[in-house]
Image (tube, rainbow, N blue to C red; front, side):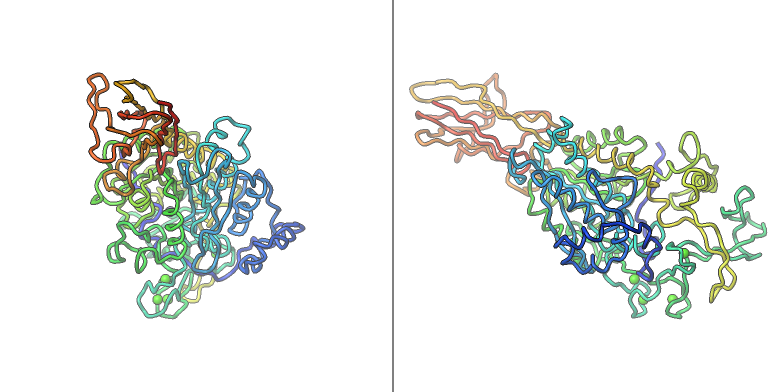
Amino acid sequence: MKKTHIPHNIKFFAYTTICSIALSAASGAFPGSTAGEVFAANPVFAANPVFDADPVFDADPEITIPLRFDRYYDYAQLVEAVHKLHEAYPELSAIEVVGKSEEGREIWAITINNPETGNHSEKPGVYVDGNIHGNEIQAGEVCLYLANMLLTKYGENEKITTLVDKNAFYIIPCVNVDGRYHFFEDPNTPSTNRGLRIPKDDDRDGLFDEDFPDDLDGDGNICRMRKKDPNGEYKLDPDDPRVMVRVAPGEKGEYTLLGQEGIDNDGDGQVNEDSEGYVDPNRNWGYNWAPGYVQNGSGNYPFSGSGIRAIGEYLLNRPNIIMVWAFHNSGGMILRGPGTKALGEFNRGDLAVYDFLGEHSEAIIPGYRYLVVWQDLYSTYGDFTSFTDNLLGSYSLVGEMFMRESQTYGPDGRDRGGEEGGFFRESTGQQKEMLKFNDNVAHGELYKEWEPYDHPIYGEIEIGGWVKMSSRLPHPFMLQDEVHRVASAVLFSAEQTPEVEMEVFEKKKISGNLHRIRIRLTNSKAMPSISYKTVKNGLYPKDILAVNGKNIKVVAGGEIRDRYNDVVSYKEYKPEIQFTQVPGFGHVEYEFLVSGKGSMTIAYHSRKAGRKKLELEL
Ligand SMILES: [Ca+2]
Ligand SMILES: [Ca+2]
Ligand SMILES: [Ca+2]
Ligand SMILES: [Ca+2]
Ligand SMILES: [Zn+2]
C-alpha cells in the first residue's frame, strides 16, 4: 500500500498562526435569544470576566440537552454545554476546572461515572480530550458528543449503560481553550491559531508577534492574495478560473501568488513574518521532550504551557486511566506511538492491543487508517501520547478527524484528479472537485470568490480562496455522522478495558488444617490489567493479589505455571501477597497453601482494572 503523508501539523504551520485583530462577523447572528439571561444567572459564568466580555455569546441560541451536532460550539458555548450536561445528569457526572490557560480561560473536564457501581478512581479510566490545536475544533465536538451519548443513552441503551457502570470517563473537550476562542473570534485560515498564547519572536528581530496576517477585506477569514503578472508562475485553469495552475517551463504566466492575506505591519520589508506564538501544545509534554532546535514549537521547557501542565497533573492523579484518546484534525487517521524511532517499538503484548483497537477503529470509521506516528508521518518529541504511554501507563490513540476527500464532488468521494497532490497542495483535479462540492452542496459557504483589493505594497491584487471553516472541518451537515462514528470507536476501546473476574477453582484439604486454595483471575477483554510497558519499566507496582484472615496463615503461595503437573513458582517472602498482571483475553492462576481455621479474604487490587474480593471459610 502506498503511504500518503497527511500531516496535520507540519512545520509550515508553525509560522502561520495569527493574532486577534477583529471580531468575526458572527456577532449578532441570532437576535432575540434568551441565552444571555441564563448565562448571567449562572454564578460560574458570571464570575468569569472572559464570559462577560464575549459579545458573541449573548446573541447565540440557547443550548439544550440533548446537545445538537449540526453546528460548532465556540469556547463559551462549549463550556456552557459541559455545564448543561452536568445539570441534566448530576448523578452520573461531575464537572471541574482542571486549570487555566495563558489568557486565563478555564479548562473544563466532565467525569462520567455511575457512583452506585463504585468510585470512579476504582474503575478502568477512559480519558478523552480534543482541540489541543486551537483550530481543530471538531475534536471538541466529538468529546461533547461522547459525553452527550453516554449520558442521554444511559438506561436506554444496554451497551452504553454497561460502560457507564463499568468505566470512569474523563473528558476534556477543549485543551487549547485560548486557541478555540481565537479561532472562532478572529480571522483565520483553516490552519491558524493552533498554538499556545505564549509570545514568541519568530523572526528574531526583538519584537514578539508583531506581524500577523490581516483580514484586509474584513470577511473574517485569512484567504490568499494573487496579482496579475505576465511573468508570474501561475495561470488560471481553463475549466475553473478560481483554480491556479503552475505554468509549464517556457510557458507564459498570468498570476503571481502572494501568500496569506496581510500587510507588512512593522515595516521590515516582510509580510506576515511573526504571528501569534508559536508553542505547539502537542510538543510541550514531559516525556521525550526536545528543545526547539530539535523539535520546532516545543516551548522553552516541558510543561511551560500552563494548561498543559495542569492536565498533566490531572492525569497523574488518575492512575486508573488505561485508555487515552486525543482528537485532532485532519486526515482520517487513528495514530499510535511511538513518536520517534529511538523510543523503540512496543512489545508484542501491547502491540496486540493497539492493533486490535486500531483495526476495529478502521472498521467503525470507514476510510480512516490506523498508522504509526514516527513511521507513517513524522517524528514527534514531547507529544501528548508519548507522555500518557510512558508516564501514565495507558494505551493511547490519536484520532485525526475528517477526510477532505469526502468533501469532493463525485460518486466515490475520492480524488479523481490527475496529478498527485499532498494534503495542502491538492492536485488541480481535487481542487476542482472540492469547488464543485462548495458550489453545489455547501452552496458557496466554503470558498471566498476572488475579488479585487488595493494593497499598500502590491497595488491591485485579488483576495480569495478557502475560508477558515473549510478544508479541515466537516461542513456542519456532515458533523453528526463524523462525531458519531469516531465516538463509537472510543466506546469500542472502553469495552476493551480490562474486566477481571476472580474465582476459587479449587479448595482442597491436604492434611489436618492445611488447605490448598487455587484462584483464577480471568480477563474477558483485550487490554491486560496493566500494560506490558508499565510492567517492564516498573512504572507502578503490579496488581496485588492478597490473602488474609484472623486465624489463618499462608504457608506458601505462588503462580501456577502448570496446573496438571503441579508446577508452582512459590514466592519466597510474604507469600500472602502476590504481584500479578492479568493478560488480555486470558487468565492467571495462583495457589496458596493455608493453615488454620475460620474465614479468609482474597482481595485483588489493580490500579487500572478495578478491585475484587472473595470470602472463604476454612
Ligand atoms: Ca519578531
Ligand atoms: Ca510569533
Ligand atoms: Ca479576509
Ligand atoms: Ca513585517
Ligand atoms: Zn492537531
